[in-house]
View (cartoon, rainbow, N blue to C red):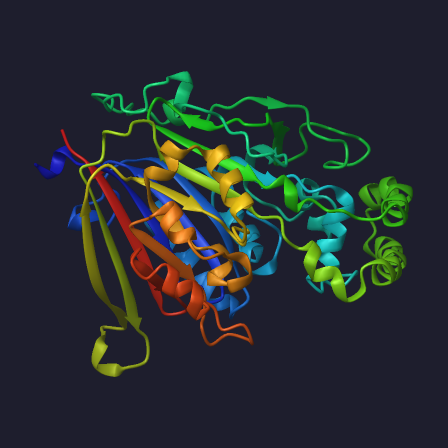
Amino acid sequence: MARTDIRGVRYAFHSVGQGLFASGALGNCPSRWMGTEKGDVHLLWVYDCGTTSPQALLKEALDRFAKEYVAKKQLLNLVVLSHFDRDHISGVVDLLGRFEVDVLLLPFVPLAQRIILAFHEGIAVDDALFSFFINPVGYLNEVGVRRVHRVVFVPPGDGEGPGPEAGNDDLDRPAPDRWPEHEDAYRLDFDSRPFPDDVLGAAGDESIGRIGHVSMLKPGSALRAASVWEFVPYNDGTLALQAGEKWLAKVRALRDQLLGEKQREKRAKLLADLKDHYDEEFGANSKERNQISLFLYAGPLSASAPDGCRANYGWTFKADPPFIASGELIRGWRAADHPGKRAAVLYTGDGYLDTSNRMDALQRSVGNARIDRTAVLQVMHHGAEDNWAPGVASAIGPWFSVFSSDPNHGAYRHPHAEVLRDFWLCGPVQVTDDSDAEIHVWWGW
């Protein structure tokens, strides 16, 4: 197979410590892929961008990511935020300041729950970040991101997904003879509906400054690029907030003031009042409300295309002088190869697959055929035991299972041993503050 005939996808999990920053690139020989020279990148995406480890780790990862792609492809086709925890969003503003974005995909969380999430995260009422939870679209516009063409919210689902790809019942049809070369061909296509009124505020303007059109994804829809690739999001509806009427009534009473208030001091006063009600209603049980996390399947629109899968997972020698040459850090790599048709990735964020019912709902939403094509799984919540049930690894059966965490960070020590043992035969890969991972799948003509 000649190198000039290679097409492929590169999944990258960046070293940010206790957090998650994952990306994907589809095209002609993505950079560093199989040792080839840089090629055209047709489709580029990011899933989450945050850490609770030192932010310098995330900035370094973003610097490397931008250096690699910004000269070749200044438009990110898709950015997905699984949920609003700091360790998944702390670098989003920096990322959106470096790239234009076609689609920003967010889980739809009602205003009443967004405020609960912010309180649970310990965000002070006078912190500018609180604005993101109140009005994520308005916040991104105010902080000066480059340009987000479309913001799409994913509503909670009941386990019903988009069905066979592109309306075709034949999941094993051959790959296209030729991928489109023009970038416009990869503009994401999807079915949408009007956005809910608590997303943008009382004005309900569909186009605000640097943030373009805002909509809700039609339930059970996929986002597709040309006839080549698809993204299937899943927002577990069983994790939606079950707040009492007293809390909901209080948020409804303050809704227009919260969404419309521009002065931070006045809004902080409103939020301080809400915080008292939050403490009264939720108290020590507030952690149980912080469960929503947007899953994302990404894979090719053909089951027969991939020729093979290779994972390069490595480490960086950061402090040992013999491994530093000319001021550059030296990377060590290990590799593993798998032939066959698996080519997709399944991102889970901090999602829950802790019961058979939740696993069944994910399989119904994504579809068993897609699950069977999953080569790479980002393991839920950094490998936390509470988000997992025995047998999840065998139900999905990935070739590579990525744990993105710092095992020495905080009291939780992710990943937990029980989860790691479950995935022991599914290519477990640890991504920490000084190690990252790349998984490549290639096609040949």
